[in-house]
Length: 78
Ligand SMILES: [Zn+2]
Image (tube, rainbow, N blue to C red; front, side, top):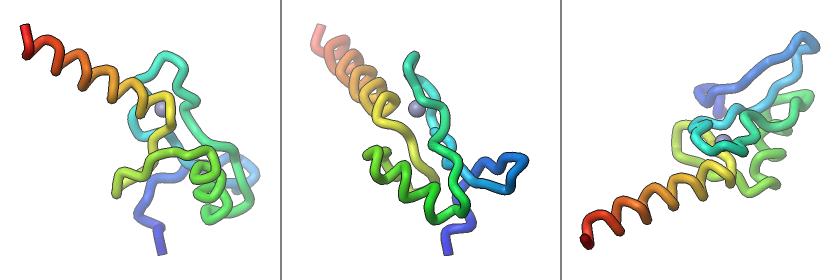
């Protein structure tokens, strides 16, 4: 299924979805470790992480991206 997506695996054989961007100061870095990849993905979806097509990134990083875009737009206007 979605085995091409990046996952973290811990010593217990559990999986977590990493944040793809990690650009926000308060980035959560990774989702919670779950028994299987499906659960790990559901966890981040419940947290409203954004799916980019190649992976997921957290809400904090999404807000950072939006701030960066807003900064660029402001600079262009000057
Ligand atoms: Zn993040």
